[in-house]
Length: 192
Image (cartoon, rainbow, N blue to C red):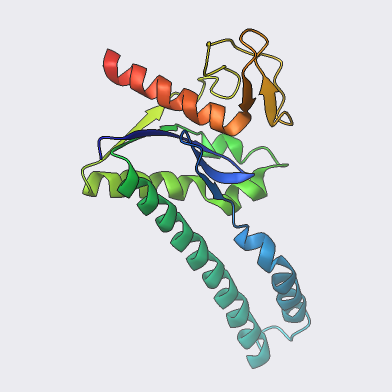
């Protein structure tokens, strides 16, 4: 395709491309949480070691397997969409282990499956002769204006849209980050 794209991975939306395409976060765990709670409550009331206890445990295991399969299928869907549309994909080299230490976001991050997505994308790109370039995790992709390069240092996580004080461009935080990742990735390829 000879096309390149920068992608920003997030919790609110799963993947945002520099072209403005958004793959939503499907919340597979959140959607099944009530059912899971109910099944686990029923298991706690069963006599340990009984046949009914084993049947209940199997029900819970099947629910977890179903959620995992849905998540994996969605990750493969997103990866296939990206690889059929683009030859080079630039993404942030996220420290997933470090992100999971934030107790407010850990459940959401684990539910999305950042690491699984990165591994699947890298493996499938290798098989299909495509290229995945990882941009440094400390590169300020969200805080930098993709139009003029101004860095807005006081940008908070709650600021989803912001206006550059230097050039007046209105930015969507995630799309701006994806565009900056694309620009930084291209710069890295030319200097390498």
